[in-house]
Length: 180
Image 1 (cartoon, rainbow, N blue to C red):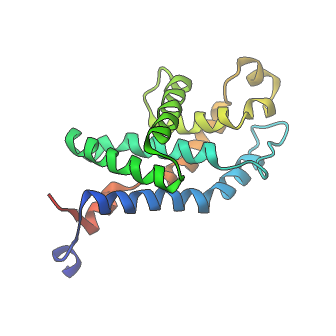
Image 2: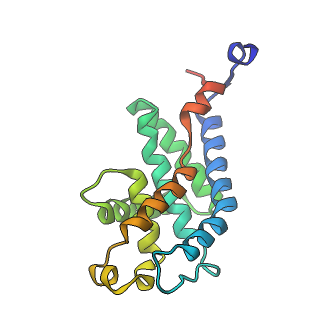
């Protein structure tokens, strides 16, 4: 009861810090496990070799998806203000200038929309993004390989995995409050 009375308040800058650090930590701790699950997935006839893969594609896919989900929890004005701070913090985390980071962000965002068309599901775009960026089509059976599309059973399993990389704003706002 007392925790609901004394909620900690966050500014945009503090919220962006928590968000950026949380997303990066989730990727750092989770990529190896996701790679292992993909390698063991029964949808592939040839095992994908992701042990040596870098997590850069995965990181950008998770970042793009989480930034897209901001609009579900914030007003358009808040989203714009938060995005500016978030992009600056991600650029700093990757040791690049904001313009360079935005170029990567827009490229991945466009890619995810393209491979997911006509669907608008952000979660589905994450799964398809991973499939295409890590060239998993090469490991599928001939039928899906010729179609150049992921096995739907793999996508369903991947969606369940990717849910764990989406920031839970509802749980966050139960504990914390924004400073207006």
